[in-house]
Amino acid sequence: MTTCSCCSSTADGERKVVLERRVRLLVGATISYNVAEAVVAITAGAIASSTALIGFGLDSVIEVASATAVAWQFSGRQPEARERVALKVIAVSFFALAAYVSVESVRALFGAPAEHSTAGIVLAAVSLLVMPFLSAAQRRAGRELGSTSAVADSKQTLLCTYLSGVLLLGLLLNSLFDWWWADPIVGMIIAGIAAKEGQDARRGRTCC
Image (tube, rainbow, N blue to C red; front, side, top):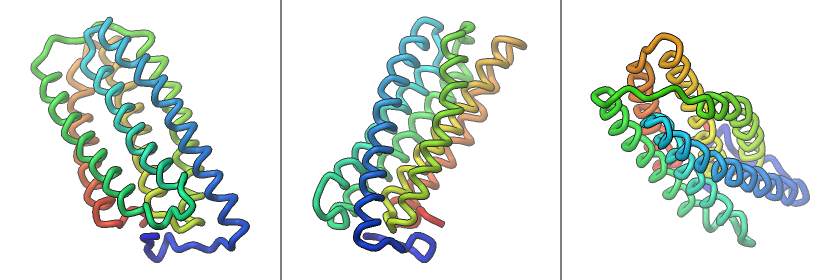
């Protein structure tokens, strides 16, 4: 596997099997949650004419692509042989997310203000609670296993946590104070972070 000093494997054969199974379960949970999240966010976004909500839903689709790459890697008998390909898919998903959030943030700044969305606020709040758990659990397993791709995907999930927080803040500020511009501005910052994570994933430097 592609590793670095803080992500070297310390697991023996039996422990390695347990960790690989754990990564598969966590990735499966991430995929399932993000599929549901995408459906709810895009539907609620279309109803409320919210670019931020629709963008959040599409981010969930990108997260599914990243997690699916890791699931594919660990479905084989030798995950190490598939890690480089998985990292490339994860890097592309980061870049796609950065590009999309950037474009949608600019569009939101010059577009019509979105309407209030109770469903969007609830979804963002739930994601803000769920995503950190999934990210931390996969990151721990990935580090002990020595898998750079598993750690990289956990960072993609962590980024989804940041986006959940930004979305929640934006929706609340829009609903309470009509500060419609707050969400797209913070979204641009998130896009910059995503681009940096994409570079790290492409170079295999995701664990430090």
